[in-house]
Amino acid sequence: MTGLAVVFALSAAACFASGHVRVGGALFLARFFTDCLDGKVARAQGASSSRGAMLDLAADVGGISLVMAALSWQLLDGKEVPTPVPLAFLACLVYYNWALAYRKHLAQQLGVGDGGADHNTRVDVPVVGAWVRFCRRMNMSPVPWVLEAEIAVLGVAPLLLPAELVGRVFELGLIFYIMACAVNTRRLWRLTTPPQLDEPARKERHEA
Image 1 (spheres, rainbow, N blue to C red):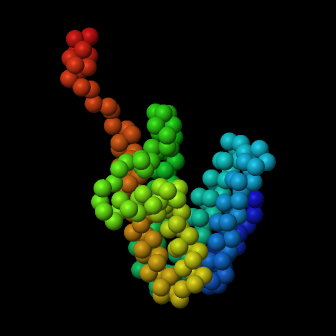
Image 2: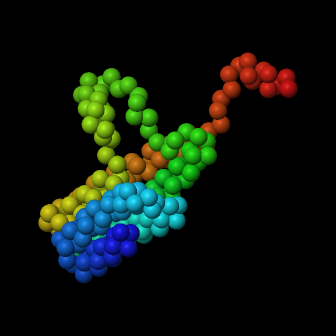
């Protein structure tokens, strides 16, 4: 299944680069659904392994980066976005994937899960609180993930929207990625901040 996802990613990138944007969007969505099935099939067959997870991650990051670069090329060629936008988007993509992987690795070492948000925190803002409670009942995340942004930017928008609107969705995706990078940086900062000792512990440490 990982190999098939790679084929879909390569095909989507080729279509974007050659100007067949709608076909590229459809192929990217096919890559996404294939990737979703990959883990489920492996777990159902009891065939999941660390090596398989590594290959799956490499295929995800490499495939998405290639598709992003190909769509960027096409949007730049059609002058649908200014040059700094795709450059910043690719930079955010690289940084986000590094920060996410390092955050999970560090959190695992510290024994604090994956280092992500605590979705059990009570939210008292009226409308936001109702949305959060609804998402918890439905076992959903109350905030969109980067996965949803990738689907919108690389799949749904190229498949359904005209070129000029694909460029606008691309710019919105960049804004989302910038925020995601900032959030992961804050979480890394929190994980790497030494715990503060209370006054008795500080005195005991000083006397020792």
